Length: 161
Image (tube, rainbow, N blue to C red; front, side, top):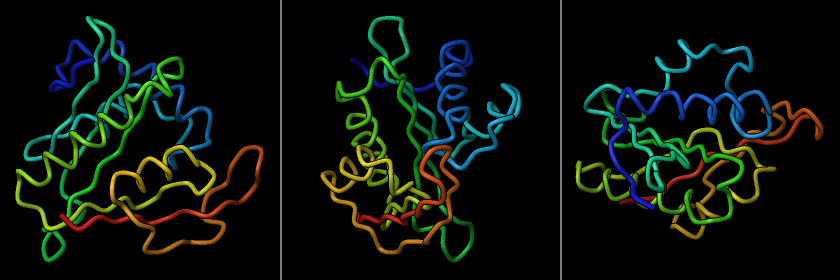
């Protein structure tokens, strides 16, 4: 597996991953009716942000986007989001993408990385981020409407860099 910069030709494989994740409504607080065009505008980060894909040969296994969490006085903290194809989960793709994003943030000189809305019931993501040095710094009770679990909490997770 290799992680490389996203190029427009990757979109035909990235969109189905994003579409599957947002339509499931289990892990991301994105509108499930979001179109491919709307999603592209949200996912493909403009510089100085960055979007990458994890590939095995020519197949996209997952994708990540990263950038500044907030402008102005908060611009010293980065953020990132990750999505992995369903049949590629459990193979280290998410871990590799997370490590790549943290390494990028360090190279860019950010003081920390913050994840703003980690769904509490997404245990694999919460555990991955904890393994990679993130901690829960706050939890918003019932802030995410899960399709089968009802209202679940969202974590804010942070790692000082």
